[in-house]
Length: 80
Picture 1 (cartoon, helix red, strand yellow):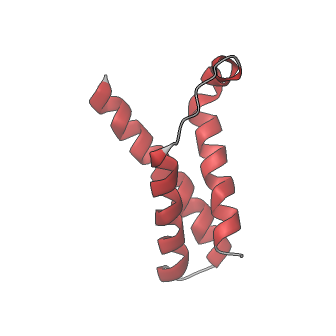
Picture 2 (cartoon, one colour):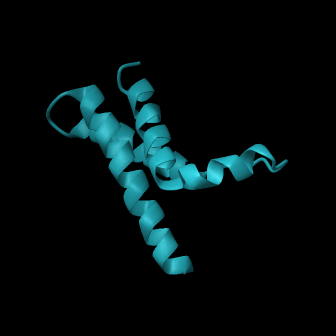
């Protein structure tokens, strides 16, 4: 539990920091989307928690948040 729960918070915080301007538009939309970048970031966070030395919950939060931000920024550069 201490490995999986904190990294979801890392992804949510990172998504808010990158996309908070678009949240109001999502309220009015009827689309349901799956954020594959968030799923990848969660997997990377789990791997960071399992294989990096240190505090496991902190590794999972930082691993998932940093990987989410990096992947999102890379995808934005590719699509722009």
